[in-house]
Length: 243
Picture 1 (spheres, rainbow, N blue to C red):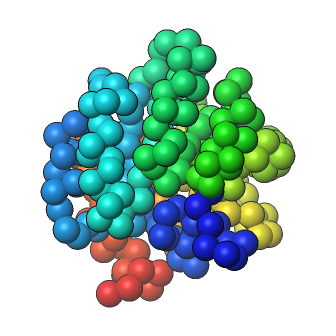
Picture 2: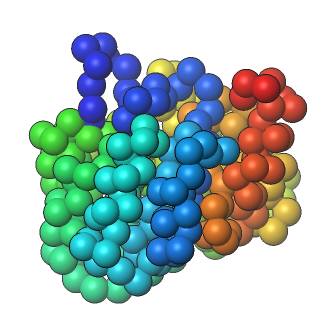
């Protein structure tokens, strides 16, 4: 975790928790190159989904360095196929890839239920990098008790930020996520509703206190994900993002 002499959690130069930060999701080498060339962006952090880029560390290292050098923090994600990601190789190889790129990025995202979660948290903190501990359920929204237990597990394992993303199939699921967000009590909690009709809920959760919200740069990486510019526009409309 990169530090600035305070106990606040940061992703690079961005302080987490003052307002919802927009994470721009990149899923292609072309989009990564485009972000690296730009001088301004409609998001605060860029998530590089290495599991979807079909590239290795050497293929993206220069682009990541250029982005970081321009002041835009990079969040590295190598999502396991277990949670609908593109990584289907051994966990040990995934851990090595994370560790190889740790010096280049500001933060990493790893699944709370992954066997490499605790060890990667330790290595990331030794390198002063921030960890997003994530949980995804694409089939539905578990009970509030289950989600609260997952958040506790993430914190106990070393996550700086807890990300919970579940499929929303009705008003009851949406209510569970809103109630979960209200239990954060100082925890940096990112709560996301996924689904074809969940875009409005994504915005509402960000406006209600979720510390991160995700939009796409090149193409949607999850059901109901908005383009970054549209997400920024909606957050400005609800008063949680500067005009």
